[in-house]
Each structure stands twice: as C-alpha cells, then as structure tokens.
Image 1 (tube, one colour):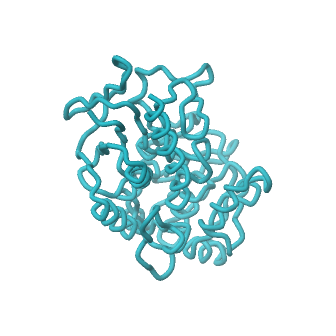
Image 2 (cartoon, helix red, strand yellow):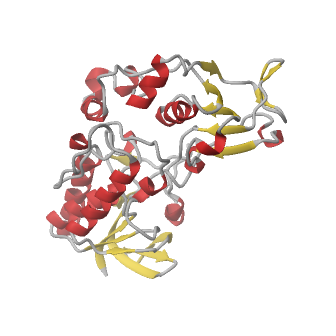
Image 3 (cartoon, helix red, strand yellow):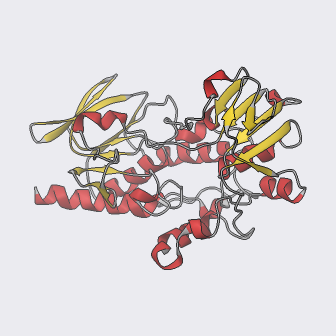
Length: 339
C-alpha cells in the first residue's frame, strides 16, 4: 500500500510528486497515457505556451531555454526529462476507473489492478472532457464538427470555409493558424479582449496570485497575444463576429443570414475530468465539488490539483501548479502525521 496515490502524471501530477517526495511520503503516480507529456502530447503543431521557457517551469528544475514561446513538443520533452530526473514511480498505461472508501482508506480501481492509499491527489486535468455548448440545430449540420482536442493543424482545412467558435486563447490561436489558408469566420460570444502585448504567463500568474486586490486576470482580458495571434490581429485577419443563433445543415445562421461552412471548430473549453471520483458522491446540488484550496471539503484526504483557479490561482499552468502542489503535499503530510 502507498501512503498517497496520484492520479495523472502530467504537469500537475509531476509537481505533486516533487513535493510529496520532499515531504518524505511514499507515493505512486498512475497515468493513463503510454508516454510522458500529459495533455501536451495532443497539442497541434503551432500551439505555443503563453510564457517564455524561463517562466514556465515546474518546481525544482527549470525548463530548458527556448527562443520565443515554446511549442508543445518542447513541453513534452521537458516533462519527460523531469519525470526521469526525479525517478518518480509512474505506472502507465494505467487508467483509473473508480475511487472508493474502504476500511478507512481509499481503494483505487484501475484497468491494471487495484491500489490502496491513505490519501489521493487527483490530477487528471480537463483535456479529456471537451465541452461543446447546446446550440440549436447543431446535429443538423452536414459539415465536419470538431473540438480543440481534435485539431491537428491548418493543412487539412486549406481552401475550406471554416468557422472557429470561441474567444479564449485556443480560439484565437486556431483562428490565427487558419487565417491565411482557409476562408475563416471567427465567432465569439463577446468582442475579443486581448491582454496587453507585454503580458505573458508569468505576469498572469502574478496577477492571479493577487486577484483579490487586482480584480483578477479576467479584468485585463481573455487572450494572450502570442506572436502568431498578434501578427494575425495586426494584419486585420482576426475579425470576430458575434455568436450565431443556430446552426443549419449548411452552416451557422444569424437571424436569416446563413454562413455556408465546411467545418466548425468548437474552441469552447473543457470540464474537469472527475468521473473516476463518482463513487465518492462528492458533487453538491449545483453539480460542483466543493474545495478548500485543493482539499475536497466532503473528503479531506482527497485533493484536486491543477483544474483551474478553483483549485488554486493559475493552477492549470506550468508555473502556477507548483504552489498549490506544495500546499497539497504539506497538508497531506500533516494529516498522515496526525493519524
């Protein structure tokens, strides 16, 4: 039996491993993927971090230098090297199917056997639960529909009529990616709000950490102007239209105006991948899991790490997950000592 089981070995799981080791705890990381890299394994070729490498590191070991904003494969290489450097006990591919309470401990059921633990850190992220809003007529569209998670790059859309839905970072980056090769229609719920060009991930983390005093990151804007987004914006290629009313067989429609489309790419976000925790019955009437920091209020031996601001300021980012991972590991160490 391990004292702690960490579910997921992406950036949040690795940060947890760093601090669990520092706390002297016995732990194992269970990862559903076949190789290291977390969700970064699935990014498209032009995907970029929001920060330079020197401001995108996990605790203890800096990311290798990169000129400009690092691409996804640079992050994957870094995470793989990080895991190897600290010689974490990572079991993969192991998919966790359920977490249950058993005799005062946790029983973690997987497709590769059962683990038991005194505490659990869930660090599965959101990439595995893409969200597409319920838009009237969406099932009627005869073209191709895909989510951010399915996007592989611009080549397959060359010359096509493509609608990109979403005014966040993914929507802006994919729209910029397609702007010169496809007939692009970019659709956002509200006018795009760009952060000042000098703002990157490091500044975002600092702002998020002081969010009660500053009004938070949302007060500044939604989109980090990484170079390719900035270039497309300044060239006048990123002109957003308001969200359509419905989708027809041939494309989205605004009142009586239909925009013919070959594909719609939904850059509409994600939900936390927490299905494995269903047996614990943690969700309240509003459907959310209540937390105090990373600790689940209804189950104090369970911590949620890296799911967004509700589990720590900027905790879904490389630079932001460290402080919350440290807090979770320290709290678990204190809990186990009291026991």
